[in-house]
Image 1 (cartoon, rainbow, N blue to C red):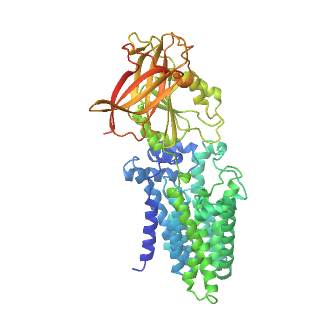
Image 2 (image 1 turned 180 degrees about the horizontal axis):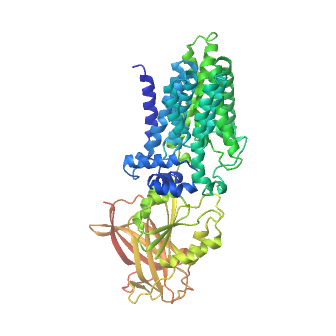
Image 3 (image 1 turned 120 degrees about the horizontal axis):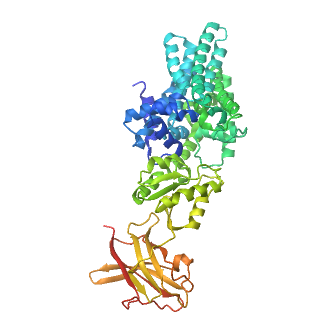
Amino acid sequence: MRHLPLILICLLGFALRLHKLDAVPLRGDEAFSVQYWADTSLAISLGEIALGEPHTPLVYVVARAWRMIIGGVDSVFALRCLAALGNIIGAAGIWALGWRLTGERRIGLVAALLWALHPYEIWHSQEFRNYAWWAGLSVTALWLGARLVERDTRADWLAYALVGGTCALAIYTEPFSALAITGYAILQRRADRRFLMRLLSLQALFAALLVSGFWLLQVRSGYAGTYPGLQPAFSLPDYVVVFAPTLTLGSSIPLDQTALGLAISLWLLVAAAIIYGYRRKAFHLLALAVALPLLGLGLASQFWDLFHPRYVLSVAPALLLLLVIGSFGLAERLKKRIRLDANVMALLLLSPWFALAMLSLDAHYNNPLYRKAPAWDALGAFLNEQVTERDLVIQLAGDAAFGYYYRGAARDIGLPVHGQQSIADIEAALRDLVDDYETVYVAAREQAGWKNAGAVDAWLGEYWQEVLRTQVEGMPVRQYRSRQVQPKAAPLANFADVVSLLRYEFHPEALPTGEWLLWLDWQPLSQSARPLKTFVHVYALDENGLGGLVTQADQYPQAGGLDSSGWDAQTPFRDVVYLPAAGIPAGEYEIRIGWYDEATGRRLRSGLGADTHALLKFQHGD
């Protein structure tokens, strides 16, 4: 088959995009897209959501249509397949563009291989956003535009109008790339005014449709005038140290970005100089396709903080083609001096790219430092099992991904609302909320740089008692309860008339951090001569009865916050005990508790004369 190599390359690229497609949970922007683009009717998404979002109307239509195709939003794998499918189209697009610009299929095939392996394309192909499928369409539109400039047939006009128009409506920065076709046409057909006028008219139609959507959604609502941008501000050096390495090789290269950016920028300049000398037509289009979007984004970033490589992802194929065509051009020059096949030599010249791409892909797939999102899925699953309708869940990060995975019975809110919310406002909100709930769970952590970080936990820690602290795959969870403990007429155990046990609550399912959680409510009866400690011992049970001690936790009351030699005999309190459970085999166990004087080792006797109280028996594991 003539196109078998291209088909195999596309299959390879698609397989890489599907590899671990749902291994990482949705990140915040993704989850927002799922909830408010895909899972919301167009009447609401376009009539309400889009008025406060910097996206084109087509984005909402595509997301909603994909949701209808896959039948819902429950499968992260199915949701992300939209990006994977849309992006791999770009492999065929860059193949056709490389062939069109040079007349050599080999250049198109190598460019397609680079696209298939491109870490940044794969990164975006594994999330439910519009950047990946837009990038696939953009390089295809660039090829169709180049073909239109050269052939000028009715079919070319129709194809470019369809794909180029769709692409232009996918993101507000695409017109910068579309201008590359206009500039290329002027350079190639400057004398053909009729053709240029038709092309300019078509481009003007694209722009009019895009501007109309922008005016209807963002300008008329006032959003455009208040949107500050959520990305880095313009920085000229970032063109070299951020944009060049990211658009060429991705954002997950575990190397020094400055040195890498300088090296890649120099490599691209050398490649461009080689192409200028022997492929002038290709140089014109590729130079325009690189320069115009980068300059356009830099200009837009003077008004909004948008200076991020993903907004000019359409530049990536031009950079790849610069490297490929430049490598083949240099190989042709060197083959007279070096007895080596030009194709092999070109691939050797490109070998640094392949090596760095593999390094970047390995980090993307396997290095937790480059993980896209924290474990929102595991956090949601944990809370779904823990909470009841009597609880409140406070999510600190303000991240939409939490709302996708959390399905628990308890009400959930985001607090702080944003990083600038005053601590006084946060405390007032807590005072109004917490009395309506039995316990409050605090999940995740505030976003980096938020000035009010820690305010929620500080207030709850002062007025309520922390009764749970754990981590779910790195995501912190705390639980708070009122400090007030209700007295009880008939205690479960009395220890030498110094303290009695009112009630307990044991959680036999180990916490994610590997402990059993035990709450003990105590009633002080009198003050001891010296400070006393509690002990909680877990014993294995066998056919002969009580076996060996397997784990224990000894602590002063309330982790040292209370002294039995001076406590108030009228005020009951709660102790929180964490029993290490990691590595304990399945079986039946018994928990025994008591009090002792650490200085003498002497234990308090219970009402039955024993120095321990058998609290409960439980089964651990299968």
